Image (cartoon, rainbow, N blue to C red):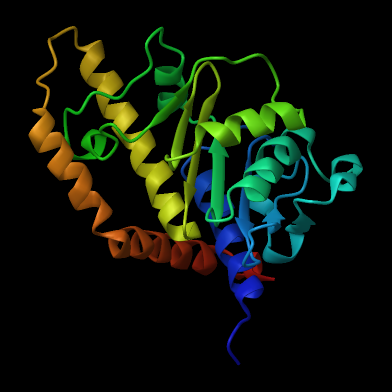
Length: 243
């Protein structure tokens, strides 16, 4: 029997947590992913407070309503997760998946005085003129006002480089969001490694960088397939993630 939309979203999101832990891109029991399951985007799945990514199963995911302010008082809902994801799903119905992480290389780049990703290869060119940047970090993002501010920065963008903090990626599918944040971290690793050599960067021209970014945008099927392959590896390693 075919799975319902929510059932499939639960499995896909649970697999994403497992993949990120497998790749070492998680941070202790912090960070959060969410996925909208209603047409208006306001019904969404979210990981429970302080559960390690490597142990999350489909049934563990919380089903919340972005309009229900009482969710903020639930013991299993992290305040920062509600502030950020709740506001995004309330204000941006087109967003179906939201991944927020503090991966090492992307976060390191976000801590620079002028955070940006210069286009020096195919991965970094994916983000040419396609990143919103927030430079107003003011501590833990645990208020509705801060969540609303961050959501406003995503108007016209799908990625937010969070200065002194981390990164947030949105996408129309969970698979595309995973591949995007994976490629973003890889791009930052390449850029920082190149910078660390002390040698001048060989920048791509604006024309080539723009063409490469557009070519990336044409292959959403590549991103979805990357995710499906990684999901299969996680399910083979531990089928319980789908429970």
